[in-house]
Image 1: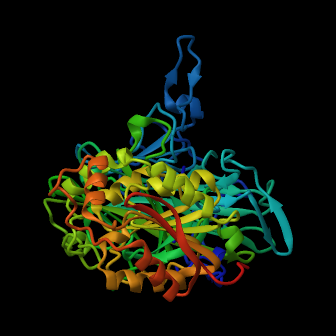
Image 2: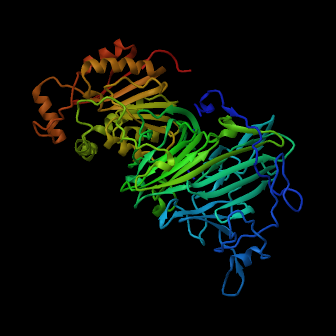
Image 3: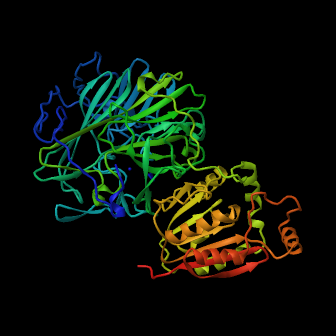
Amino acid sequence: MPSSSGGPIGKGGSTPRITSYSPAAGSLASSWAGPRWRAIGVVLEPSTAATPFRKGVDLGRKSGTKEKSLGLSANEAVGLSDQGGHALIPPTGNEVELRYDNQRAVVVELGAGLRSYTVGARKIIDGYGPDEPCTAGRGQLLIPWPNRLQDGAYSFGGRDFQLPKSEPDLGNAIHGLTRWSSWSVANRAPDQVTMTHVIYPQEGYPFTVSLAVRYALSLSGLKVTVSATNAGCEPCPYGAGAHPYLAAGVGLIDDDLLCVPASTMLVTDERSIPISSVPVQTTQYDYRELREVGRVHLDTCYTDLERGPDGIARVVLEHRGRDWTTVLWVDGSFSYIMVFTGDTLSDPDARRRGIAVEPMTCAPNAFRSGDGLQILGPGESTSGSWGIDHIADGNHGTAGLERSPLPRLSHSVSANRWQDPDHARAYLTRLHEVPHRLEGEEALLDLLPVSLSRVLDLGTGDGRLLKLVKEAFPACRAVALDFSPTMLAAVGDAFAGDGSVVVMAHDLDSKLPGDIGRFDAIISSFAIHHLEDQRKIALFTEIAAALEPGGVFCNLEHVTTSNARLHREFLDALGVAPGEEDPSNRLASVGDQIQWLRTAGLVEVDCYWKWRELALIAGWRAGVSS
């Protein structure tokens, strides 16, 4: 799956975050040796026998009763056969059904995945049917690393390792080693089950790790506890995650309300590998307060989670109609949460039908960056829990939640009309009809440096100009700023699934964010002319400071002309009647803007293309890019 994170990630040059864990009391070890269970540093309650699954049969009759052997093979336990009488195995193996009151959860043999979770007739997770394969990672566990590992390669303990590239299109290894392995039942009761598995030394991961996952239903909902023990004789790298999709309320996820209590998000490259981290504040990915999911395409890793007094961080999904809320919570073992709206799923009918909220103990690519990575010494164990709570009729008591107000944009609101959806949509309908605009855009592309690495687009609109830049420089990374909700939705659609582009909500009337770094090029297309002249002057100084030495600022702009006749002819060419001009316009002359840019410290400032009131003004920051 494409994915959505403590502290800035090490790939951007910051210090990797390494977390060590002491052995967890009560964690389970798998049957890696001997006829029964062998414990490593813990005491295990033995099972009476190695027990198969049985599909659709309640094996435990009383709470706490150990499951007894049925003496059946896996095929016989399933009870399916083809027309020739041959036993069949479902695509995800045998399964165990858990029940508590009106809750029902189904855990499958393949990968110990969570196939379904319902409360009454209501679907809590977007899972799959009993005779269907698991697709898009639905309900799977991600061990011993979640998300992606760049090139499938990493170094550990002074040695280099190469894992199979299980995501061949992007050349990555993805989601660990246990998703397609059979797990065994250790302990079973009507409302809970413990599954176990051993990762044995293999290509790229020459370590032995004993795993156990416990699924349990209770009044508080579903709780999942994942435990791991290093059963080998040398340290090993370890991380864990899970991939449940929370089901949409009705139809698509767009109208549901989402809260992700995280102050930082990871920025990824074109292969979905994190390269830096940025505050969510002023980006379209800021869901710290409950608000509509909207049309935003999320494949975003969040970190710096806000936790309650109990140490729990909660992601809230309030469904359409506001009569039902789903809460996915994580304990302190999980410092990252990936959120994915499914826009790139291979099955179009499955897209945006649910939202994957993925707890992760470490960041994507942690085997290389060390960000959140756990190092388990021989015999050392770790354990962490996450869960899903279901709250009906607006009663948030079981989750300890308070209803949050819908958020407001975190920037100051300009007096212009670009937050008016009708005004913005009207502009988008005629955007491509502006005469000679492509000529100006081509002239702008000619001024960009050959080795363009990072670009900032001011007032990006629907991302038209930035798309041209990305076509010419596919490897460049970009930050796109706008403050119109309509434009933000449009540019979000334009770059859906492109982790190299970060879209941020920002009003150019406010000072540029100080934490977005420096750029080889800063571009703008018909946006800055909406600012008052004093703000233009201040903005040009901020632009000069945000450029790398040798970096260029290119502004394709609407400027004043010398007399009223020429202005009327320009409006006629655009098909704009007198009196229908944009009242937001605050036009300045080419000469004034050249002078202001020179005063800001740029050099070789000039007008590099012009047609009537359309002009390309550009200048460079002195120096040579390193």
